[in-house]
Amino acid sequence: MPNHHHAVVQSFVDMINSHDVSTMEEHTAAGHIDHNPAVADGIEANRAFWTQVFTAFPDLKAVLHDVIAEGDRVAARLEYSATHQDTFLGIPATGRPVNFQSIDIWRIEDGLLAEHWDQLNMDDLFRQLGPARPPHRPETPHAPARRPARPGHRAPGRTTRTAPAARRAVTAMPAPPPAARGEGPRGTARRASALLQPVLSAHRYRRHHGTQQPGNQ
Image (cartoon, rainbow, N blue to C red; front, side, top):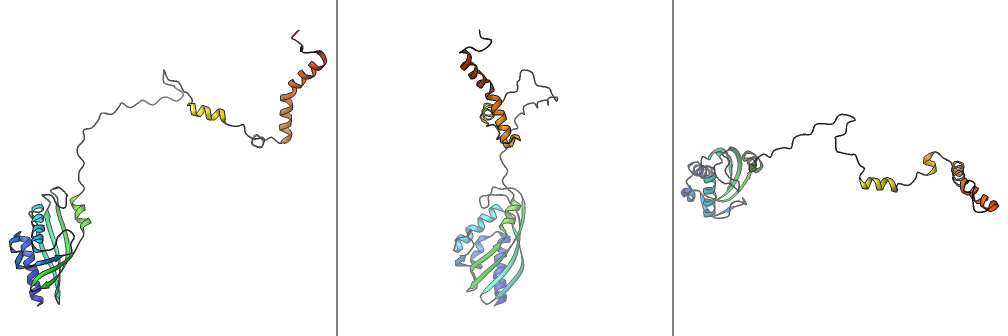
């Protein structure tokens, strides 16, 4: 039985290397179940999938490295090499060579591949295909660079102005508290007395001499 499992897997690999999907019935069951989300169930869906692969990679070749069979299961490690020459999974042709491997497990029924699971490093495959190149855009001329001004020199015709918002901020800025100016309560009282002294003097003069002050006669 294990020898037959090896033979049916080899028949599958021969189909890949010959790109002849007409031999699908020799190794794949009509009700084939595929757990790869990119492949629908059924032999015809499997045939259509491989037709698309051969179109995208017309020089695709597969090498069968290992085959392990037990009961109704057979596992294989395959290595693929090809050149990307048509759209594959929505990626336009890049002309780049790719090399990747897969681990495949099949359930055998009536001597044919009846159910399939596989593991591929799709990130590595997409890395080899590379990101799509952005469309070419013509270069735009750059404005001539300004010559840096000399220290202390101001360009002619230009004045330095304070932005309105900055002026408003400076105007509205409250005076620092006495502690911030290094003044204590006594210092604040002395400053207030000095500011009020002219007003108090004028008031005392009007009380004794009338409304006129010296120098206004």
